[in-house]
Length: 472
Ligand code: GDP
Image (spheres, rainbow, N blue to C red):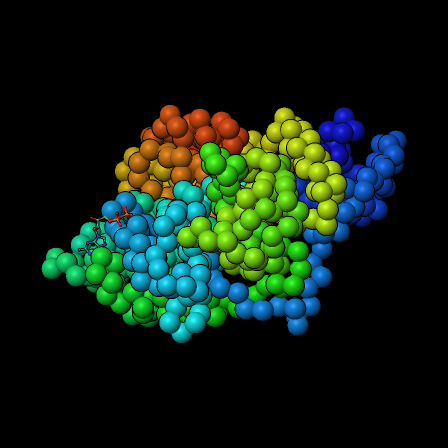
């Protein structure tokens, strides 16, 4: 951004930083002092507006250990179609006390919080599937703490199961495997454990460290045990947040309601959101007129890990947008305008994602240590061969990581994963579907397709060799 404001190339800005002894990468935020010095090198002066200063000051983390309390885990359910994601979520919703009171949820608001018999809480994101999960990540919002991967025991580990596992792993989110439909006479949980082990996911019963639980989502068998495992995993993660400050978090979904105006479901990640607070969410803002729970009942406030519907915003923000409470309307408005401006500028100027051609430059500029690749091919054998050979290109400086590999067309979900993980997409004898291609254009993800293995290897190798210089 700084480079384009001064009409110079980003490389020039980065080398100016280097010459000042500041080692930076392309997407790094510069400190105010550095900004002044670098701009000066190019003959520019920088004036800071209040909004810049206030926004960066607000992002500072000033929580002390005493401020922090344990918060509920936030869980996403993923898995292959028809393996029982919806049934699992429905069962949990129906049988557990919601937001402290009995009775089922009537409205879909994108997330809900359940209180278990032992008093502990879990928040579920109610849009199952790894596409929603990764779409949020591609927008820079990671809300999920734990992923439940549902696999039907009367079936196999399917392509979407593999995708879900890759997406969770790429995000660094711990998984709990729910081996579902064990009530069925033809169910074979051992087959699932076996297939998981073949892809290096070892469940605890087989000596690994991935928790798993056999369940029947339809009849509710062992669902308590599954939720216990979620809580156990949450304990290991030591999830904490400070409830005693202005709220901030992420937008889950938003829509326009005929009678009530814009309604947005948001998930509070830190602080406590109250009626009357002034909120900025993405480009939208407004005073919180009402807070509603999953059943449309008014709430006075919502603390960390609580999902809540907000009435009062001046528009519908996008899922994955960040929200934050501001001291007053003026402050929120200034920053909303700034953000809009910045977004417009960014969308025309910056190319965010790595491409094979500019790999060398990216590495030379910063500490780019890992090359993420998503690999799709026409047959398993060639995918395996290509995957092995690509990984063996790893050097001490750069490791080549295949974050997802599979057989079949390049899908939208592959493109989203590439966007969220800054990965390169390689297709071997396969192409991208129409929707995937559109999304790739929009997200500026490069898709490379090959029909000869050595050609793919050579190109990646060349790009990497470009990136192995220079030694500073
Ligand atoms: P989703 O596509 O992953 O959301 O799967 P659904 O939850 O819609 O389930 C697909 C089908 O499997 C439905 O007909 C469910 O009734 C059935 N189903 C889900 N869980 C179980 C289970 O534990 N046992 C049995 N027998 N059927 C199940």
